[in-house]
Length: 116
Image (cartoon, rainbow, N blue to C red):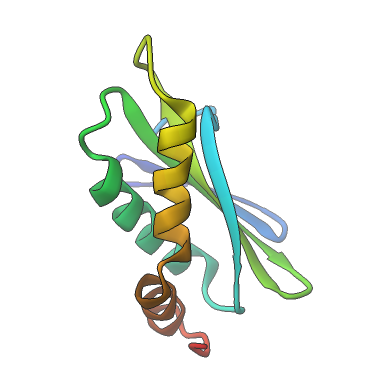
């Protein structure tokens, strides 16, 4: 399914939101969140990640949200078409977005889950 220019793929307990298919993780960071709406979480993570990385040339966000025993496993990152980029720096920036307490609370509450 495509929402505007974004592709939303559902495969069982897994949802992938990507601008380009096939979805590719050249850079990635992961976290877990409490149970909530997967698509809404993916949209919000994508928006915040894009705000943090919009200056990165050739970056195209990808967010994967999968149900797991402890809630949701979120992988965020994406493809980078730039010839040269600092993988460690980008992954650290993505991880800082995923671990920001105020963002995590907002994502979960807006997606119908219980905030921690």
